[in-house]
Amino acid sequence: MNRTASAVLFVAAIAASLGGGAAAQGDSKPTNDLPNPYRTVADYFKMPSGRTWGSTSAVEIDKDGKSIWVAERCGANSCLDAPAVDIVLKFDPAGTLVKHFGAGLMIFPHGIFVDRDDNVWVTDGQDNAPRAQGGGRAAGANTPAPTGPPAGATKGHQIFKFSPDGKLLLTLGKAGGAAAPECCYQPNDVLVAPNGDIFVAVGHGAPVDRILKFSKDGQLIKTWGKRGSGPNEFNQPHALAMDSRGRLFVGDRENNRIQILDQDGTYQTEWKQFSRPSGIYIDRQDTIYVTDSESESVARNHDGWRRGVRVGSAKDGTVRYFIPDPDTRKRPEFTGTSAGEGVAADADGNVYGAEVGPKALKKYVKQ
Image 1 (spheres, one colour):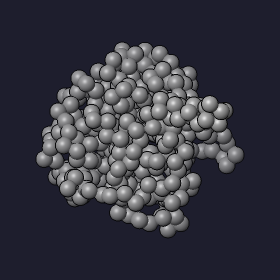
Image 2 (image 1 turned 180 degrees about the vertical axis):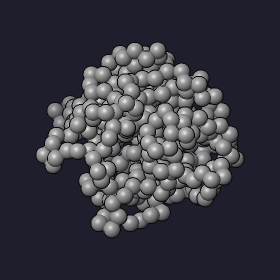
Image 3 (image 1 turned 120 degrees about the vertical axis):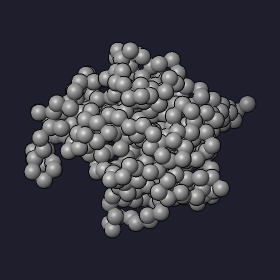
């Protein structure tokens, strides 16, 4: 066998060992022209009288496979000025609100996860520190991006574990936030592995991008990652999911890719065919749902890709379906977020998109 043939076999063997990931790694052509077998059910979820939907990026499925959990931003895009409004909401399969709790605990609910014991985990991605007039922090144009919370923060940047009835069971991180190596600043998402280990992704604009791994009782085991675009480097690790093989999927949003790692943080491969990942959900059949809420609007580095939810296989990286964002506006006309930032799917295959810009929770039913 000559050297060329040997090299071809070697590359093929690597691609096979990565379960299709290697072949998909360099695939950066837009996956827009795919069938959409879903229809949108408008206004499915019913809020109590007098309460309207605010922004939400957090949607998850209950252990029963049918009920839906949401962490919602108090009718606005923050709960800072609404300390009496419950944040964590549970809807039954008919879209009726059946449970709510969490008032006053969070500023900016961002990520959500329901573990095997039906406990509900929520991340709080902002703080209550005083802001400069106009909404921003008092910082000059040449001031480096912060790597920790500003002075005066007494609430925010924590991860909360609730029982199904809303009892607070565990809190990760210092109230008001903390810079590395402590936890946390800008926690985006949380995931609990089958063995109880807890994974948290941090960094939502600030250059603090990393993954933290905790034991089931909240003791920090290890951290890894930094700002960058190489393997196991991140730029806004916005979402976490885990497949049936125990692989950790990280939605590395600003890098327009999903990185796939083992539970010790060892890099396996990366996928770009699911577009710019704001949210990721993997069901028990290893169907993967990835939502893109920023391409050609907020994002300035992902032209040609349409916003929406892509559905495929977590086993081999195949993208099968695409639920497009009905808002087709682009920069410079439109620079906001649209479509779901969070995504989940119930046991019947219905898809749910948690939307920040449109302030809605959408349901998509497969026809």
